[in-house]
Image (tube, protein in one colour):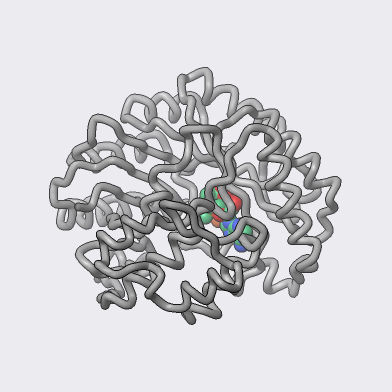
Length: 362
Ligand SMILES: C[S@@+](CC[C@H](N)C(=O)[O-])C[C@H]1O[C@@H](n2cnc3c(N)ncnc32)[C@H](O)[C@@H]1O
Ligand code: SF4
């Protein structure tokens, strides 16, 4: 049964040069209409299930004003939370403050995810971000003082002109924040972004790989467990919400451009604000058994521990060795297995995507 919810807040106080997510400039009138439509969508679709993980992401949820955040939490009052739950709220350093954090705490948020991206002013400027590392340090301190002890920060690397030394410094700075989860992203230059329009080019693949290895080694040396291709956590602080995605479990996705997976259907809401507010539409993909197995493999192999063989059998009544080219992948030593799990060989994790595309052919 579904026990997770993603909620998208598509407003930002600043648009970054690399961002292709569903977002737009903050606008008070639009926020007002948006929250009304979000309420309608949640009221009409949520079926009273006990919820174990909620993730409010964006855009920039912390760009909403305090009265708008209060309204958002009023909308969420109908959601029944399990006794043990994880409730994440994404914040940007420049628009989160004490008053908002207290409101989050009062409303059950127990995990904060901050878009730090870099600690280097030159790189932050390139990314079009409006904060600096001093502000990050102040805000992380405040977040901790207010009693949040489960904190993620996002780091972007492989930024054009970034050197290995720049990345080393970023990692040192981020480790010094003493948070328990770090998500890392290699910069992608995506269509319709400022970087793309400016014809910026990605860093060399070789340097990207070197940077990825540096991140993995440095974070592991500093007590982080590498549990998903791009995610690292201190023991016990893996993101339960993201694990729902990687374990191919169902979840609601509410809001503009949000995706969900319910009753065998994967859906994506329209990403056109006017349509979301006035004429709600979403695209749906009804999954066959083969589709479900593809998702299970593509998502499951993102985890360093891979896929539990018994769980796979219980779900699909097929031995995982019999699907696609799993046997061949084992023979070619792209995959390995132990008593319980089957997983991508650690030194092949970086090329995980190309392995799966070749064999599963998505
Ligand atoms: C959609 S953003 C939302 C969070 C928040 N608004 C922020 O910007 O920090 C989630 C994360 O995705 C990453 N991201 C977004 N666009 C990216 C890109 N083109 N390449 C690499 N990482 C990207 C950033 O690290 C960002 O923090
Ligand atoms: S990266 Fe985050 S803050 Fe920047 S435009 Fe995208 S969603 Fe907004």
